[in-house]
Image (tube, rainbow, N blue to C red; front, side, top):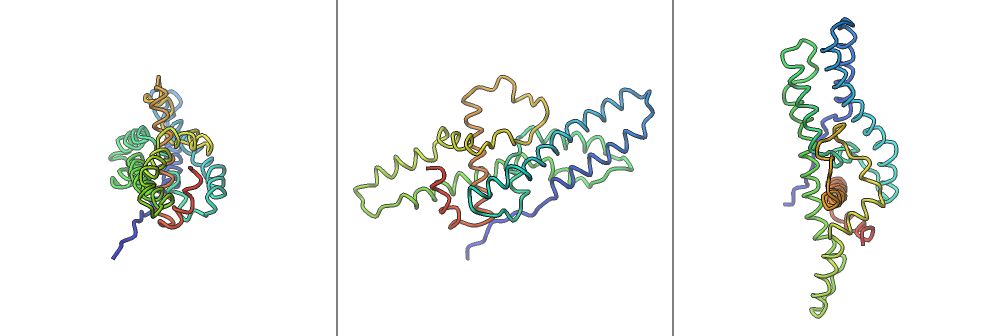
Length: 228
């Protein structure tokens, strides 16, 4: 029997909000002359504020736009957030796990920090799923029973799932500006155009991974014309 893939929500946004609130309370209790510790906490707060601002914009701006494009309503908006996470976000939650280690005000267990830190890995897995189902979905959409057209099918499929085509779709949907990453992400500095193009294509694949997990293969096939 076919087993439907699914992911349990981890409360990504709510937990990030709780971390921000806990850090702010901690900072408020530190004397003004403890500059080093206050600067450290403010650095954490700046990173979390950046992430929370992006999360809010994804909820208010991007998700409604994608729902209009796909004619679908996401059941687990958190998956859309996870699809837009970049590897550098791991460092934020790992640093916070180390900061709160053995402190009385620690809001989470170790496993919860691991889940939050793995958000970038989740994005990679969603892109992997999206890549696989897009290949099959495009083939099924283009399928022609005549053997004489097999060569054209292969060429057309390659053109649709090619990274340069998906990068254009990414620009149309404006996904790139909604990425969840650190402030001053080192990987962003001097990024080559080819690297940026690849990342844009991966973002589209990750969104299709979400569509597959949320709605299944039939709805995914229905949306294939959007990238043709």
